[in-house]
Length: 164
Image (cartoon, rainbow, N blue to C red; front, side):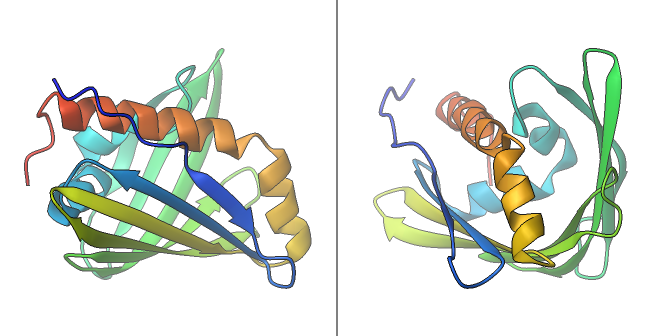
């Protein structure tokens, strides 16, 4: 197993725009990272904080498709849904809605940048409806889900469970 570790995800808020940017390097190919984001079984194994479990309700990972999953924590369920606008080899554009805030829809762009030598940088950008909504997301503890989720993804990649 590869024991190489990567730094925590960098999570930055643009001071002038309602945008959150997340950057994280992985020991993986762009195709492996795309698969980890598009294959529902793999995605459910790594997404979110360690304390939750998630299940797919709808998953149509193609340009124009839709998705929905439900996460459970301490007996409470939280739904998330969106549409895949563009699904490409090195880029995914999708919407994201937390069903607890159904009027707040973000537009997410994920880019998988080949760094060579089996490494890929994930650059994710979420454009929120307003700076207030963006700041509410940042206060929600989202960074725990991002960091713990990516650590789980690192383990799946190191164990050879994500084959492109």
